[in-house]
Length: 228
Image (cartoon, rainbow, N blue to C red):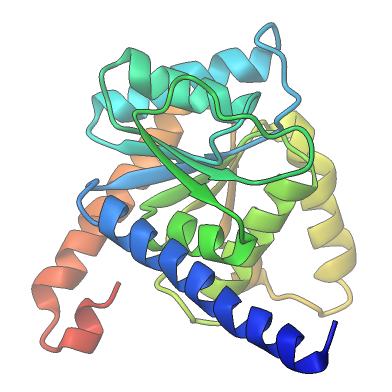
């Protein structure tokens, strides 16, 4: 392929990327307070974490929160299912993958992405909080990206909740016994992360953040301060 043709194709790619941002902003701007829930696509409906995710999603939906997931099976399906069964807004941010990802049937607002980075913006921009159920690399990717953005003050802080203390204990131990001891993170950094097994505690954490954010908006005097 001539180099000029390659450059042309790369230039046109910009418009595909732009369209994903535009569609995402337009479709999600009116969904209200939302919680992004992550977890393994491989989790069976028989798994306790699947069942707990359905229950947690239903609880959050009952309290006025839109549920956002990656739109696939497993934990994502469970979260969408809890919201949809409760009559709430159930958003799926689907991604094109060569395997594994098939949109679940519990989405009542479905968006499709080719690019992970555009999709990640939507998870962060419209989230009142993150809940990470047990998951693999994708779950860790979403968690650490948000953690880094908050730690570096690139976005306003919001709750980062790891649900399932037994599953997440080794990760927490690594952070405390290796990263903290070697001064690669601080105690304040670790305070950005909350671990729980209690669905009511998740709701309480996110409700408190919602109240805090409302207070920040009320106090804001400039457009920049309103850009939460």
